[in-house]
Amino acid sequence: MIPKDHPRYASLMIRERLVKGYESGIVCTHGLIAHGRGEAFDYLIGEKTTEAAMHATKVAVATLLTAERPVISVNGNTAALVPDEIVHLSEHIGAPLEVNLFHRTEERMDKIIAHLKAHSATNVLGKKADARIPGIEHERGKVDKDGIYGADAVLVPLEDGDRCEALVRMGKTVIAIDLNPLSRTSRTATITIVDNVVRAIPNMVKLSEELRGIKQTEIRKIIDAFDNELNLQRMTEHDD
Image (cartoon, rainbow, N blue to C red):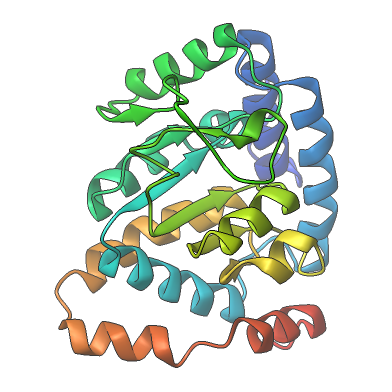
């Protein structure tokens, strides 16, 4: 039992969710290591959503709302950390969830899909895997023809850099959530949200509610005015 007055309460609760995800077969050992690396970057930004991160989040939501075929890619860590929030975002922007794993087994795929459905998801892709991202030979290259493969915009929380590059080469708008502003994913993505997924996804849900009532011309202005390289520079300098 972690007391709520513990100075690291929020961080420790995130770790608990990942441990439970690991014990249930949703999260793999490599995911635990990846989280620790990301947590170190979160310390550097004060474990809070910066102004630059919120700006990128708003542009990301605007982009997903105007996309013709948006898709949300989900891995084990994302499913374990923000299952309710990712399902709500999927509903709000009309984008299916697609489970996509580097360490893919049919058993793990089934467990993550069942986990998302237990959190009210109704449209979860990934099992069919009837298409492949060109140039990606590992398991994350396996995608659904009606999902990530055919999407025009893809939200990729906690992404691998090589797949991010490959999706961009396919002509897709790629929105990444990555705590490391210097990573290949951050530098390659169309829009990079440098934030913790446990803050970024709830922020996206809230913004999707706010932006749905705005005229398309205004949403287009939000997207067109964004410069990902400049926003990453702000994050690198932590100029907030």
